[in-house]
Length: 280
Image 1 (cartoon, rainbow, N blue to C red):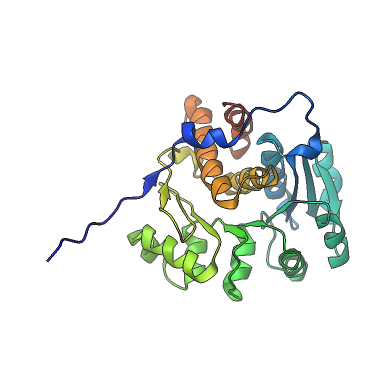
Image 2: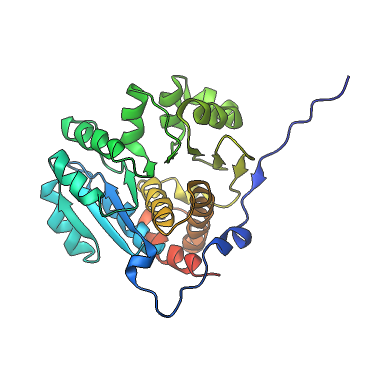
């Protein structure tokens, strides 16, 4: 009887993945590098969508629009004037903005209110490639569906809700969990945490060996959503964007933690994200 060989996840290698980002031509313009739309930022959570949106800019998206609560639009624009920030309350407003965009990052600070559900459903109906995070994943867990054009980015708690199991079940066998998530929801799955896993249901399961405990702080997942969305906007396939985005995000965290892990902020990753995105 032959022995069953269990294969280990394949490590993500930055030096290989960064080759997906070629140097820019001298005659480039902003339209060459895509238009990212970030959707979220409910009352009390404007910081989440602000972090995700700047991360999309820092990784190189040519344009970034934000669809958020009307009361947040002006303050977000003032804090980062390069963002095109829109107060959105109706589906038709979001549809109008989305028509100009290449990808949607959905979920940072979205909440689970009537407004949240309205924007969530409208974003899904656009048919654009999507990166789905945070409360958008919690809304998805209540009404599961499959989509081959999205990247889901759950942490262990969100993964447990998506699979209707416990956090302990997820942590006990993370590889089995990422496989089940992909089987049930389709697309590309990024199962976040120490040793984040990336899987598209076809090839290898990939593991990220970079990152540090200092990244266990609020807003880090929002930054990852922006990074992956910004890479898709620039033309990378969802799986490539997920793999490169995860390793850039983790390595940026390691660079930012050179001054200490405790007290590391999600916004501290912005400068190293930019440096890493240009390291080709």
